Image 1 (cartoon, rainbow, N blue to C red):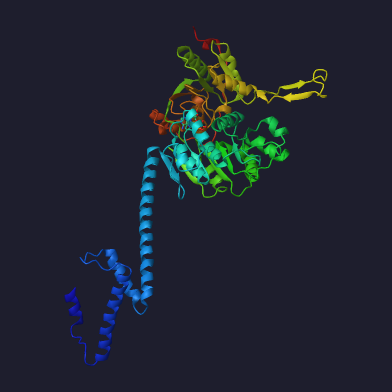
Image 2 (image 1 turned 90 degrees about the horizontal axis):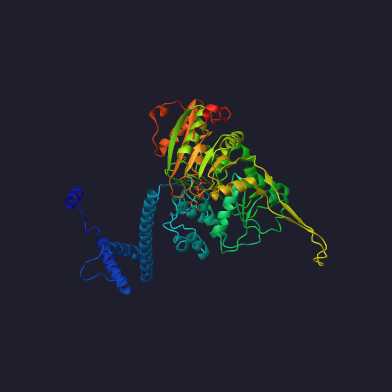
Length: 558
Ligand SMILES: Nc1ncnc2c1ncn2[C@@H]1O[C@H](COP(=O)(O)OP(=O)(O)OP(=O)(O)O)[C@@H](O)[C@H]1O
């Protein structure tokens, strides 16, 4: 380098005589500079170490000092040393924090990978390592941790690990996780934590579910989680939506179907302007045509600009996500496993029965050989549910049926309390017992094990949590891949295994490929000829089917 420099400057001669005056000044200045530098270092007690082992940082600092000192007072230089020190300290702190952030990002990524959690969105909070983190990272009251433990929930499920922290950080959320993977707790837990305690200030959280049964189940789960804490948790019954005085009725968390809520908003002037949390459970169902207007009016009624909205489902088509994005802000997307796939805990099978008669025969045969209750049998319409029920009711099986046509009975008990008995009371009084529906009874009997085989339409295909359903039989092939995923998802819940059998005939060939795709994606074997079938262009599969009727030749000999 030196050689190069001398080569570059060769031939240039500095005339010291001619520039003697300037040369002297230059020499003086250089000397005074050094003295100043020395002085400033001594003053701050940071003189250069004698052994000459000066770190790179210090050298850098030294250079800076000499630059600052030039032409200014001594006092300023000492201030700048302090400032530089502080700057260095801040820089060190910053780089330490940056390293820690990077390490946390790595740990989060590993935890997410381990649990099959996929996220998109900016600054997604770390997933939970365990439930104890609800206290250490967030303010979680002891009642909730106690209730989780009492319910036997030792570890958060993957969707709970991520969706809970997203909602606790105040972010909106799209969550898609397999059936039976604990999505209900994933949205209820943050709501309870954020609302802290009950109040009489109006509705603060709304959970919308597509069916009455699911709404009832969700409000029950919410009450279990809130046990020991005064919260007003209400299920919107038909009676409530028609006659409640919502101004006087304390309610923190309201669980409802869209129609009943819309009715209450319109007719009972239910005020939702203070709602802080709005959950659309089974959101893809709620965004279907029949519900869209009702959802729209509920979303509008929840007019608090700070409302946190979240969408939960086991199936979340892109179209729904796109639609939902138009109303959501800075939402985080959390997908567990593969989007729109069935639970891997369910063993799925396809059985060809040739015809409708063949289906009934196959069902009877399978029950005769090995009936392992509880079993759910899905059909495509209420008419077919009634037909199949008639057929099986005479077999020696405890069978029941559930569909949208089952009546609701309101029991009104009128007490005419005679003033002769209670002289202080002049009038009679009317006690209205909440609607008791035959649908509720049917569900309860199935839960209690009184019913072995429950024949159902898609009314209970979504969200219903029947513990330990061993087998789901699709007597009729479902109308869509999503319907298939939800139906079979009534078994194989909360880590248990399950079985799903789908009976099909020639009429179902066109739709078979869609089911086979779901099966293959969750690791089940599918005959290759099915995968070679052409894709179905129609969206819904609802073929015209022959009635379910035993013909003499169908009877199984005992
Ligand atoms: N952390 C947990 N540990 C063990 N069991 C849990 C945990 N969280 C929830 N469960 C149980 O798992 C079962 C399924 O939960 P949940 O009904 O919330 O599933 P889901 O994901 O909403 O299903 P679906 O998509 O069918 O609605 C319930 O019985 C619930 O009590």
